[in-house]
Image 1: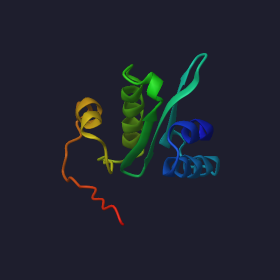
Image 2 (image 1 turned 135 degrees about the vertical axis):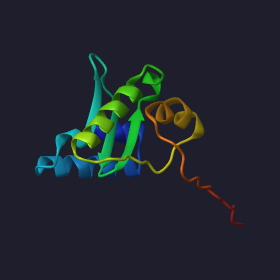
Image 3 (image 1 turned 180 degrees about the vertical axis):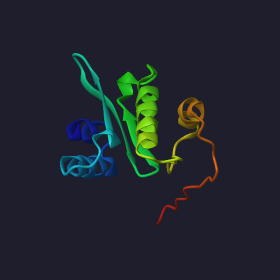
Length: 121
């Protein structure tokens, strides 16, 4: 799983998966980290939660649009409920993913942030 995330979603998501995996090996609930495995292709997606925070979630670009993200989302939300959480939130998403995936499961926007950038010369 760490190899998959390193290839497809490099950066901080690798740390999240590494830390969640270590916590699971030490006795944390294994259902806080999900992997989608396709026969013959191996891991094609993953999803995670920590407390009420949903995410990150990622599906290999070549496998998107097939419902894998929906299955992963549903599994994480069920796991959060089974762990006793009454709400779920995530930090960021693009509008397309929010419309296609998150709103389908009842998420609603409560706050929006803007990323600002300046070229330094």
